[in-house]
Length: 453
Image (cartoon, rainbow, N blue to C red):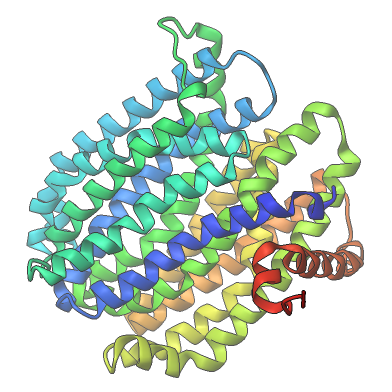
């Protein structure tokens, strides 16, 4: 698999996955530095619940859609319809459950105002419903430019709306963020529908086989993602249970920096998962092995500057970004820097498991990760507070990384030496990027001297 052949799509894909980073920057400048700590903490809890349920719904109904559509079959109407039905059912049931237990959640998390705001959660799900389906279909067809445009409407639109709200002196509470996200997600759904409508053809009778196919794959996919999502988001809830929303605000003021990890993870998954499915459908195990080795090394190399930046510049980053607020979070950012060496391996391994259809392996791996996370959080948070949450996150992620690589080598026989030998491909890829830049019109207009007549 020649990565250079897909350079243009790769750059668009990476650009699309940097949008959450831009969103996070706007979030820092326009939200964290402005909102009172308690209001920010309440919004974090609402957002965590929204992202948790959205992630579970995606795993249950949309991950199967991505796999089956990527396998180059011609008629997807039954699969698309089955996925839409199951996705809608999951969202509706989850919304009803949240509304039923909203008061209890507010009490347990030491935030009475949270219960009232959770009534607006179904509106956020409705606003993002079409967007999520469109993103999956565009990803399956490698329509990276369209993916970028659909994501840009939300990730750039939300900060713009926050800025407008602020200029009108209307931005001072978590409820304002709920309203803004409903608007930006709705607009993103409209754009996604325009791009992906040709693959959204539905049928009145999806058929038992289509429903069962999506259900069977989705059940194990849900189990795998269930554990990983809970292990990745339980920190805020457990921290809130012990300390309240103010400490959650401090913790998430620095956790926002590691969105860059999510960006790289999603960018890798966007290519690795559908590529794996295609290699498997063709019986091309040799190309799968090459892609796996390159992805592991490329991802790790790309993380080195991130690690150095977080480790060495943590005091400066926190001081400059928050203008003197949240300085107690500096050690947490340095601890989070260590994650840079675990994230690429986890991203590649889990994407390949899904592409191979080995969802049971992902399920067991996620259960192990969840168990490690829960043990770490309950041991460390009561004693160390915010630092305990940070250490628990990093330690449990490290455990998942080791277990994921062990499982990956069962399906893709490779050695660490073979992965290391791919450094030549890293160098060739870097040279290809330089050549691409030199050949672009922008490069020529900016850096080449004008020819004399």
